Length: 260
Image (cartoon, rainbow, N blue to C red; front, side):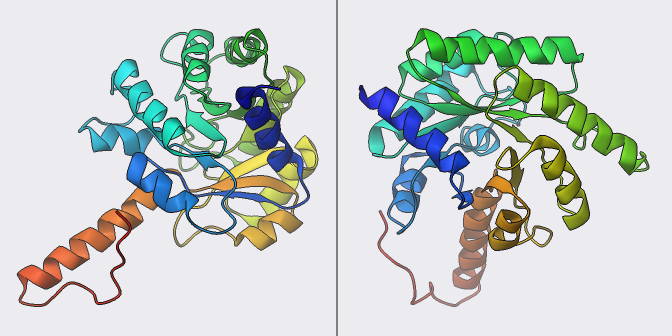
């Protein structure tokens, strides 16, 4: 078994284990090595929003793919745990983008549907999974539906959840091991979607001030929870607060650790 195959198997097993997989998303080498030094961290996921921001780009495939991949490759080479990449919506060719990521050692990834017609979204899922098979691995695709992200504020919630479930079930039928539903935070709605998709099939993001604790999500049958761009925002909040303190005549926090 190659290292690539081993990492892919490990990542898949982490998604199907009884314990929820908790991922603090990273955006560069120092954030990756800092997170992996935390006891209990068994895998990493990159955040496309955060990587784009690092280079001064807006989110949404505005960062050039090669620059995005270069940073992800640096992260993969710096750590010894499986890495999942945020593929955004595939940069126009989801299969080819996934293949390039796999060449760097990536063994899983998010793929946004951006509410394209379902047959197109399913075809993109199939293309990514084929890229994995062509490389000899079971690529751990976290197939994302943007049904809640792109919905109108006054949209009917029951209809929205029905669409989430319809798309999620289609992605699972196409071979995706898990389905990612951003902005799903209500306990009862999570239960409805998790029950419809099946145990250990739903993954979520943990927005500050709105998310349920990982322990409760595990009890609801959620497979994975990640942090997206919010971990970078935590770091930037600490940076801005420290800058304000020292510019205002204070000093840096005594609790600062030498992590670089």
